[in-house]
Length: 117
Image (cartoon, rainbow, N blue to C red; front, side, top):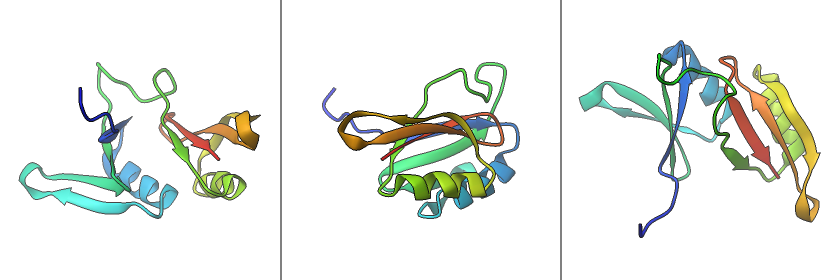
């Protein structure tokens, strides 16, 4: 494998349209994108595609899977913002190496968003 960057993160939810709106508020720097050919809307954060997709019998929404951690410049401000749009503190706030902190915020569908900064 030659290129090892993250291309996309899939977030499984029960209501895609509502979740797209919520994630746009949660990540105000995200750019709304659309693939007309596939009738598919998603968000782009830097070089990462944030794809909000329907939960199903194979992949449910919730806290049972992997957590992606987003590096933030102003940790306390980022946590406060996530809470202000309806996120719920799930794990942390934890002090880690080099004076950094981390936590997990749960979205309205039970998925965890990791913050680190």
